[in-house]
Image 1 (tube, rainbow, N blue to C red):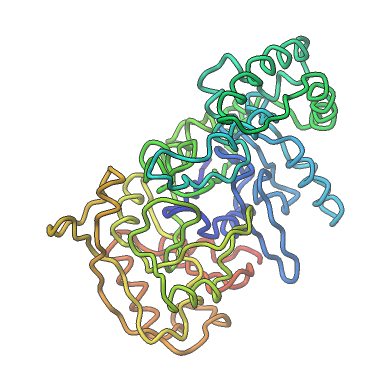
Image 2: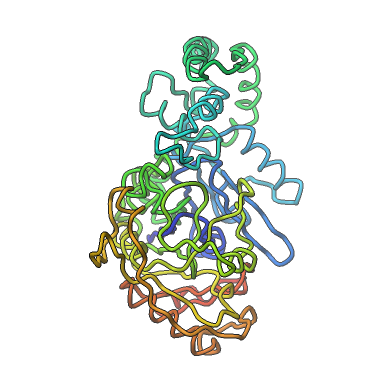
Length: 438
């Protein structure tokens, strides 16, 4: 038995889905352990592009079971839309299980999200996708107004919804500051979610028991993260974070499987940095260089379509999240985006009020005040999307990889030069994955 955990080490959108898709054939199970429909994973198979939100990226491999675990919050119409979309393209979706412990997003969560979106941080938007994720996690922790997937098929659902709607209508109206709010209809919600429950029930299991049994049976599990470690609710750029533990520390809690089961943790990084929404972004570029990165990298959100903020690679931040998550090795994605740049910069330290520091500050005020200290490396002119071995990369590209590895303190075991499965190179401690079938 062996397990692999894949974690994004930046602010999400690191192309984790591609890596998960490739590595599924080396595992029996893929387990998604956090987040909701705010996560967007894109898998490219030749001319076929699949954009996934709830469903794990291993769904394209029929021999692999895909498990949405207790740590995920589920929006029923979204996951049903994904299921129907995959089926329409010839993917039967018979290899998926949904945890009966996963919490469900309801219309009141969307209404709360809209009402509370404006933060108190000088009016800066926290960056919510307005998909009800945060309010659902808040109810999960609060317990009184929480409904889990298993509750949808048990007696008493109608009465529970009526009780919650009565309270939520009053609460949401009070948050509107005199704005208009159409009260929620408990009967309508009950009828709508009863239909969802009927369609989803074939997938519902106790995923914790299923995965623990799989461990006992010696099956290999690939743990799929969502978002990125810098968005971790406890250890990220708080309050500009997601609502769950999106770093490596969340894998065990979300899945219900002991951390020791994952004997390899792969930290996924882009060759540069991106961020969506508000919050500090130390290496953000506001000039034509940032726009060039955005255009070459097609940096628009999978879930929202929002243009991503782009900047240079931040080695200080990634070293922090690699240590936090327990990364054994790095997977560097989208190296091809940096081709044709005359020079490249890497942030190697911060200037905080005149002091040079190499640690990642814990408070948002310090993060706003730091200035990046850069090291400049020569770029390369050649396009590298056709390169299939590290030895064939331009020397300057190899130097760039080596410097990132040195600064972060981890080897780079995967290099990606494009979105397709074939545009991936495995090396070092991950060389045994070189025989994956693209």
